[in-house]
Amino acid sequence: MIKTFEVAPLDVQKDIDYIYDIVINKDGKRAINYTKERMQEPVIGVSIRYNEQGNPVSTARMLSRSCYHNSVRVFDRYALIEGSTGLIPSDYDGLFKKSSSEMLDQQTNFCLDKGFKCIFISMELRVEKTLKRVIKGHNKYSKHLWHFDGPHYVTYEKSQGGLQYIGYTGNKFERK
Image (tube, rainbow, N blue to C red):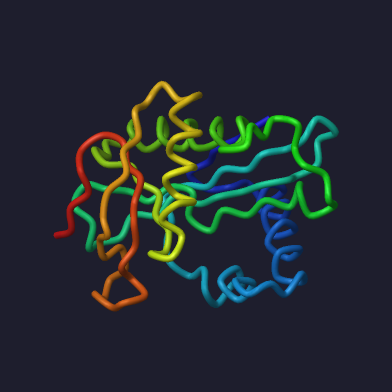
């Protein structure tokens, strides 16, 4: 079950915090990105997915920055804890998990309803092939057609770390 909120209710926020705490405690190379200090930007919404037993297993934010022109970044700070036990989700097809695709579609529809014309996901330059695979996999399930583009600056400052490839649906990505 996937739920999307403009503002997560307190019980859902606790589930989201639980997911991020697991990611942080695993102490992977990107764990610091999930600390409260690194997640201060205002978001326009958040999604959470629960497994069949009702346990929270993944979450992602939707982020709109003032430097974007009518665009919104979805799947921001995506966190999946389902695979951390060594179990490969049954809906993984080698390209993209169907459940992740469903979350991405739910976020896309949420943002389109809010009036955004470009909905995008982004990844660092060194994982170009990964993003292409995600887009290909998502297009198998989605009613929206996603495209690969970039690189583009997706951060406020045009720094090397802010230059990323994007996958988008709707209008092409533009900065203000």
